Image (cartoon, rainbow, N blue to C red; front, side, top):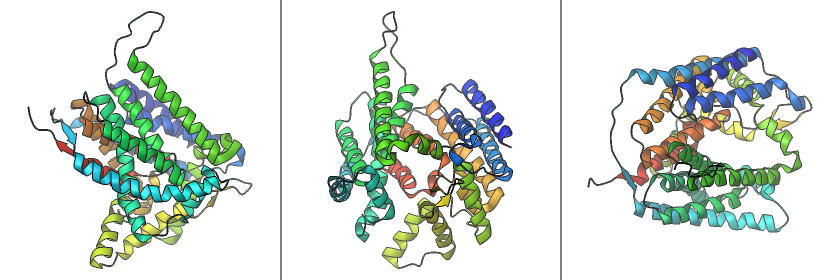
Length: 417
């Protein structure tokens, strides 16, 4: 099944590049990434454990249904609208103040660790264990407001920079402040990746100036794109070394090769427990907010069925699985297909992946028909979530789910002129 997966990914990538106007599109991203994952996993380097044919069959089916879902959107006609959106500045200011206050508390504690001799790796390990966060109100604000809003602003800022003729300097200041505070507070690279990937998408999706001179003299915008790429590469290398030490190459291989064996181990545990989520795992991020707020405010008991699936999803991040023959353990990285399997086994993977394909197809068509800041921000978030398909499904995760909601909230329709 490894060879079948590689052939499917290679052919689908070619189809995505040739059939779509944009070379970086949901198909080329999804299948290009999974070609690399499956190829690396098949090499079995650094004693990584091999996955079974059944696991690779689930991956093959999932990818095939994603492809079908994406292209089925072409059957339906889409309207060419001309709606424009601007930011609700009062809401952005309010959420920025709340988020800065929350992250400032976290950053002070993290700086104490760094000054005491620890690095980003130590901060990250303590943050993942939850030791930094022991205040219930701050935890709620961090989960529902601060982190999702920081993610949203990290996307909105580069979108405004590339798409708008009017530069929104306050949103740039908010983005820089929140990105720096978030990185210091928990050692995470994700918010920086969000902003960098959005900038690259916007750069490649907007029209460039013509090359003025011979001898490959680039336009101003081309130099901006090169600068973004170089800065992103340098920062990610530095943060990876800070967190993983000089075994970074080996750990980078594990990051992009352990997905099949992690999916196999966790699907086996799901089957053994006889837990079925019936959709609650896939939309855990949205349900978490709904059920926790209703429980805290109105005292309504959380549904037992959702609690079971939530506990399983939490265990993926806290329980470590052996991924190599010499006993190395890892967490997370169970792929986008895991919550679908938890919801409905192999049938869940089919339904979930075709749904993901459809929403990515709709998102891509929407910006092709009428690109505006709101649509591009939402599309960028969806593409980033697709980039993380080796780890999660967007609506399974609390932060990405709430970021999606916030992107809908912080924009408003522009008045017609």
